[in-house]
Image (cartoon, rainbow over all chains, first blue to last red; front, top):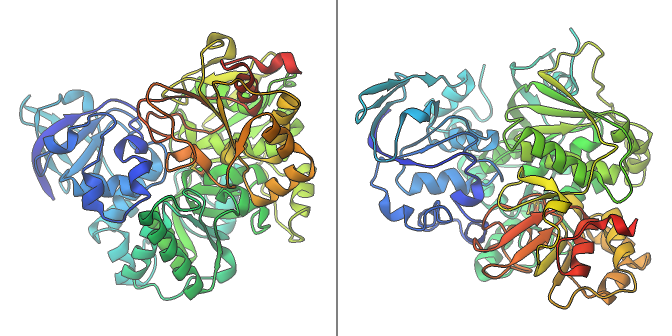
Length: 166
Length: 417
Ligand code: SF4
């Protein structure tokens, strides 16, 4: 999996209420509709600024707060290819892997908003093309790689009928 | 090698001796979903090829977040949940029953040593009963419904040793707000918290729930306490079931140990828009408020409503304030009626809404207007949390919220104690 796109920069502690507000997520299972409101409370026009393949780049504790899986689904349906952050909140992190949204822990201080980024997930490499930098990546635990390789937890279960992580 | 509480519970449930950073697949004792997360889980259940739930007795859905339904979109999702639970033959708590994190403990299905997953981030609440319970998303919920199992990375543990006696007018909510302010919103990410010390022993089980509930507000996966006589007599009101408590070994290894003496603690307030933006009440006293909320899975229990009623009895709230009370469950509501607490609150000017999440998550029951200040007993004050990103939410204890509703400005409740 290789992605190329622009960085959209956010700060620390971006919570799931900011990613997708509760007032929308309780109403519908239509993720394309929810995607239009992604990050709305932080940047009302964010959805319009995304070109397919772009990245959300954030500080620490990204995705803290509620367990709503609509958060990674809204991000993915908005056309974001991966989220890069210094660290993630744990439920959000699990939800991303389970639903197939790549998340990468790395030093996002080396990326500015607007920088062009290339992410090679399999190779574990991030290139900041604008600043000509290679950024080291913290590797995912083995179980998560297995689930991601199956395409998420749903295909994993369909394939094995249960957890098969040994 | 000695084990922490969470290492013990994950060992018994995975059939091997495990320690921090091990990865395990463990059996779960109970699985819960609410109306914000279950609909997506039902979809994933079908896509995964799920036929039946792993054990009908060990599964429940709760309609509490938007309850009763405020619009047709929500109604369709509620209907989906009702049809699914009926078809699979497991329990659904419908509108008016209460908040999931009050109903699961009241069900008697969860107690010391249990392992519970819930598709709600505050599932950590049952840590007060010595259960390892944690929040998951909808896909994990579907996997748990089908298999009765879940994978975990065994977390390291931060031990909080809480010594001293809480002063009058200062409560477990003030204590946990103080801890969160100290360790910050991501101070315990990927970790488990263990709370111990004479200040914890002195708390009622209701007060302990408040502390375990907010473990996730410091990023923790769980907030655990040891079971004691109070735990067992609390459980005996709901079930005759026997549980196997998990105790930390004396030589358990902790990632960090933090000690606090809470004898001089003042009432605490979390200011907008962060739960770790905490200060003593004095620093924000005098801030005008337009709405006050008493309820939620953090502070909607009988003890909480009773504390508020003691302050409001025979008085009227300020004319510029709307006070909303959401009892945590039908049982709490009935008990509060029997004890005259609801009478006191309503006579003082409170609007009592359906047992459930109330206005906590911004779907209904009191969305604030632009520029308004709200003081609430809830656990989150993020911008937009209550449905309006131009409102300001302050978090505090039921006593501080009641005293503030009376005065119309944020107020120190200690003069009432
Ligand atoms: S009361 Fe609030 S925090 Fe608790 S479960 Fe309901 S929405 Fe979540």
